[in-house]
Length: 254
Ligand SMILES: NC(=O)c1ccc[n+]([C@@H]2O[C@H](COP(=O)([O-])OP(=O)(O)OC[C@H]3O[C@@H](n4cnc5c(N)ncnc54)[C@H](OP(=O)(O)O)[C@@H]3O)[C@@H](O)[C@H]2O)c1
Image 1 (tube, rainbow, N blue to C red):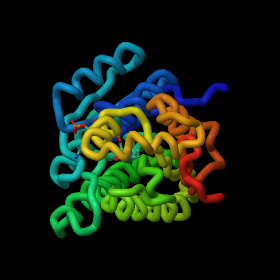
Image 2: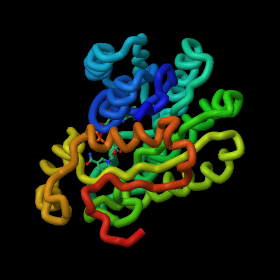
Image 3: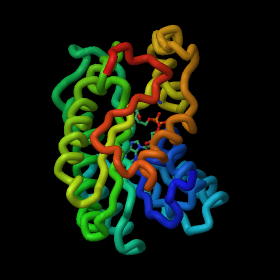
Image 4: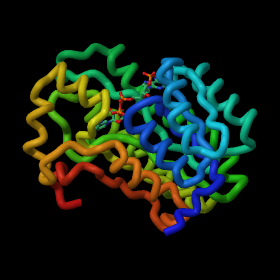
């Protein structure tokens, strides 16, 4: 199947490692032009080199913190100095710390909200005018299985991710008129640095494997394949969905 992604311009947030990088690699494999970002210049540079090896176009790697308004605006500005618009926006962020309700103070909630929700709002604001002008766009949020079923010891994620899913579902309704589709992809336990750290801080995450019908953690490229399909021309009639890539972990019917 030709996904129709050749020469599409894709901004993948928080993409120097893990799920974001896997999505960037998959999109580059399909011929898209990539903009990637992260805070650490060294890991960003390594990710750029890795993606550049399979990309015929120059990969734009921008360092900055998506949760800080001024830095996020710089990322958007620098992108739009190189590309007139972007076609595909993948929102993503670092994951919040583990913990239960009584472990967190107001500033922890503020940080989680800025990392996960405000960063997505800011990126959509920055790139929406170009998509509307093109009358073509894909917005895809990377959230979590926590949107559908709370994960133990992750109250910040369980709470704030739901707001991102609500935002995306609303945008799907509002932006369909511009031929922009908006979807939410919910990773389950997937082998990345984030999962390694979760297991180190709370060994109960390792035993979560037993709750996954497929009996194993996911691989980043399995997650990336689903996102890439939704970003493609072939997914032109799919909008407003929340798709789990979780090996069957979510136990609800819908
Ligand atoms: N892996 C899983 O099992 C799983 C399951 C459910 C949900 N999720 C969620 O999916 C998202 C991605 O997970 P992952 O496993 O890929 O995490 P990861 O391996 O920790 O990678 C996170 C990426 O985000 C970047 N990043 C973090 N904070 C940033 C910021 N403020 N501004 C810009 N870039 C930032 C990191 O680079 P720098 O640190 O250099 O900035 C890195 O490239 C997270 O929100 C995570 O909670 C993951």
